[in-house]
Amino acid sequence: MLGGIVMTGASVQFLTGMGFALVAVPALVLVLGPGDGVCLSNCASGAISLIGLAGGWRRVRLAAMAPLIAASVCTVPVGTWVASRLPGPVLLSCMGALVTALVLFVMRGGRTEALCGVRGALTAGAAGGFMNSSAGVGGPPVSMYAVNAGWTVREFVPNAQFYGITVNAVSIASKGLPQVGGTVWELSAAGLAVGAVIGKVLAERVPEKGARRLVLLLALTGGVTTLAKGLSGL
Image (cartoon, one colour):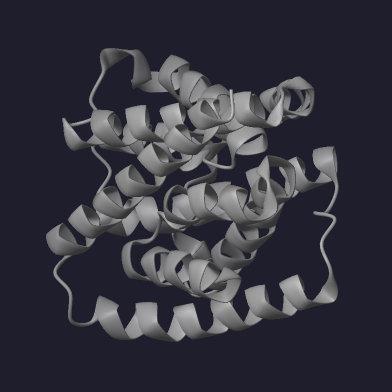
């Protein structure tokens, strides 16, 4: 099951340029628990972003990304602190509710004047850093910023990958590696490898609009499931 979760998330990430955490985190926290599930997602997301950026690093807009990354670095420790002090069911409920709300917001257009300009970049970065370290889903605020800034998909993907490498590295440094056995790492690595191949093949065949809809539906399902699991344990 674990390998399949990572494979699905990796396929989505390579297909659309984002979405691993939205798709995989709800399932990972159900299988491994909130702490290790989020930590493993940080590791996998960072690895996928690193692989994806290999061919597009020249298109990274360093000036535009600087405030996003600076703000996220400041809020990662806060997210780590909050997550370490919440009971398991409460954390699951918060994660599920957060993912569900974000997906619904994106489905409705995800535009807001609060995410424009440098102030918007700082807001998106701060929210992304906190959410990445606490719930493993730091991408939506950055994608919403990109939408409001009018970035094309070609512009967004390498910058999102650059952000993913940085914020996940800081999150891992803040929390440490997940306390899981070697089998988990092996299954995760295999899932990443297979997912990368599937995602690249699908990227040549699936229209962007259809891929985006698939990501959102999978993420919404995962968010609702995690919310239900958390509420049932309260």
